[in-house]
Amino acid sequence: MKKIILFIAIILAWGCNDGFLDRSPYGSISSGNMWTTDDLTDKGVGGVYQVLNIVGMKSTSWGDIQLYQLDGYSFSSETRDAAPIMIGTITPSHSLFSNAWKTYYEGIHRANDAISKIQTVSPSPEEKKARYIAECKFLRAYYYSRLNQLFKGVPVYLEPVENDDCTRGQESEEEVWEVIIQDLTDCINEPNFPNKYNKGDANYGHATKGAAYALRGKAYLYLEKWKEAAADFSKVKECGYSLFQGGYKELFKEANEQCDEMIFSIQYVGESGFGSNTQVILGSRSVKGSGFAIYTASSRVVDLFEWKDGRAFSWDDVIPGYTQMDPQKREVYFLRDTANLSLEPASTQLFIRDQFKQKAKYLNMDEYIYNGNENRIKQIYEGRDPRLCASVITPYSSILGRVISGQEQMFTSRWPFTATTELPPTLDHYNIKTDHFRYYHRKFVYEGDSEIIDRVSCPTDFPIIRYADVLLMWAEALVELNDLDGAIELINQVRQRSSVEMPPLQRTDMSKPTYVKDQTNLRDRVRNERRCEFINEGISFFDERRWKTWHKTVFSEGEGTKQVWGTNLWSNKWPGDYLYTWPVPTAEIEKNRNLTPTPGWSY
View 1 (tube, rainbow, N blue to C red):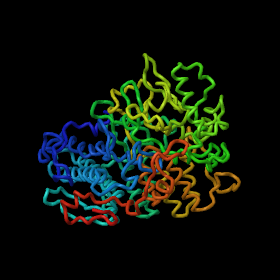
View 2 (tube, rainbow, N blue to C red; view 1 turned 60 degrees about the horizontal axis):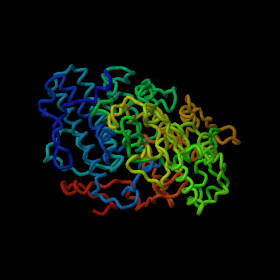
View 3 (cartoon, rainbow, N blue to C red; view 1 turned 180 degrees about the horizontal axis):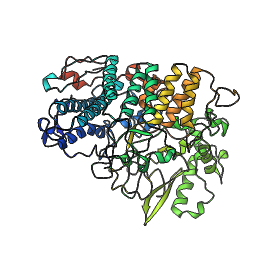
View 4 (spheres, rainbow, N blue to C red; view 1 turned 45 degrees about the vertical axis):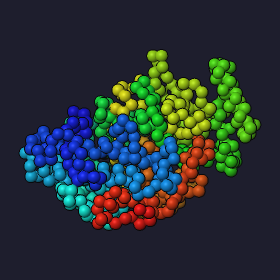
C-alpha cells in the first residue's frame, strides 16, 4: 500500500493551549481512546508523522511554517519579495519563529503521548509496539533536532504534559543534542526496527534504522564529534542505501521517489488534501493551475557550478571584464535575438523594438550579437556541471509546460519576455514583475500535462534525508579528521554517478583544476559540493548556519535578491551574529516566565 503514513483522516486532540502546543482538535477521537485498538494505534502513530506534512509543503497557500522553504533565506535560493529576516527588520514576535516553535512542539507532544500510550494502552502485538515506539522516538528526535538547529537550546519534555506542566526553561544546545542522540540510540538498539524498507513495501515511508543512523550522525556533526559521525554514516551504507544511478533530474520525479537513495521523505499522494503545494510555491504553471514563484534560485548558487572539466566557473572566462562591470550594464548579454523578429506578431515586434530602444540608452549595444546573443549565453550554462541545468531554468532553456489548445507547450526563458509561451509570466502568473529576470527552480517542477489533480495536490515525496546527503556529511567528518583520501573518495561517488559524471577530485596532479591542495581546500570543496547538490531541498539554510558562513555567503556587502546579471532588487542586511540563534518567541516568554529571552534580540 503506497504512502500509508500521512493519510490519516482522524488525528489526535492533544496538547497544551495557546501557542506552546495547539489544543485545537484534529479529529473526533480523544487521546485516551485513540490507542484502544490496533487500528486506532496505527492512526495514532500516523498523527505523529502528520506534523511532517504541516512543516512540509501541504497547504492551499504557503507560509513561514513551511521550513523547507527556508532555502529562500539561504545560499541556493531567494524569496520573491523582501523577507524581514533578510533585510534586518524581523523581531521575536514574528510568526516565522512562533509557528516553528509551536508546530515542532506539537510533533514532540504527539510523540510523547504515543510512546506512553503504546506501552500502556495499545493491544497491538509486542513486536509492532516496539517498532512503533522506535518510530515515535525517531520523530521526536527529528522534531527536537529542528528546534535545536534553529533556537540552540529549548525546553525538553519526554513525557505527556498537561497545560500547567508547560513551564520548563531551556536546556543548553549541547544537552538537547544529547537527548536527541539517546532517542536515536534507542531506535538503533531496537531489534524490531528495520534497517530499511524496499520500494513497494507496505510500510514504506516509516522511519528506519538507516534514517536513525543518518540523523544521529548529523547530531554528532553539530557537536563536532567527527569520529562518531563518520561511524554512523558508514552504518547507513550497511543498511542498504545507495546512490540512484538513473539520472539526477529523474531522481526527483514521482517514479523514483522510493529508490534506494531516499532514506526518509515526507510522503505525498496526488489526492486532495494529501499532496504538496510544490507547484504553487515554485511557480510552475500546468494544465491544472498556475503558481506564484514564492522563491527562486539564487545567482550565487548558479555561479558556483563548475565547468564540466572541473574548473571553477568565472564569467570573465567567456566575457572578459564581466565581473568588473556595473552589474546593470551586463544586461546586454542576456537580451533575446531579434534576427527573426519579423516572424512575430506586429504587437510583439513593436514591444521588443521599444524595449531595445529604451535599453540602448544605458547599455553598450556594441556587445550585443544580432543573431547569436541567446546562443552565447545559453552555452555558458550548458557547458557546466549537468546538475545546474537539471536544477534551474536558466536563460534560453525550456521546460515542457501547460496545455494550450490541446497540446503541451514548450516554454522558454527569454528576456524581455513577450508571449504566453515564454517565461517568467508562466511562472509568476499573478505577480508578474516585467522588469525582473530571475532564475527559476526546475527541480521538483512538474512538466507537461501531468497527472496531478491540482496545484496543491502534487504527489511527489519530498526528501528529508537522502544518501548523497549522508555521503557528503560523512566526507565532512573525514575532512575534519584529516582523512583527505577517504573524504575525496566519498565526494567522488556523488560527483561521478550516472548523469553527473564530473571529473574526480584528486591529490596527484597539481596541474588539474580538480587537485586538492590541503585540508582547508577540501573543506571548501565539500561545502561547495553540498551547495550545488542540494539546491532547493531545504538543506542549504541549515548548512550555512551550521558552518557559521551565513553572514559571509548570503549577507556580505552587495548580496541580496538579484537579477540574473547581478543587479540587486533589494539588499540583505546582517543585523549581528545573534541572528544565528532564533529568539524564543515573544508569546512563549509571556506564557512561561521560566524561559530566558534570547541574547541580542529586542523583546
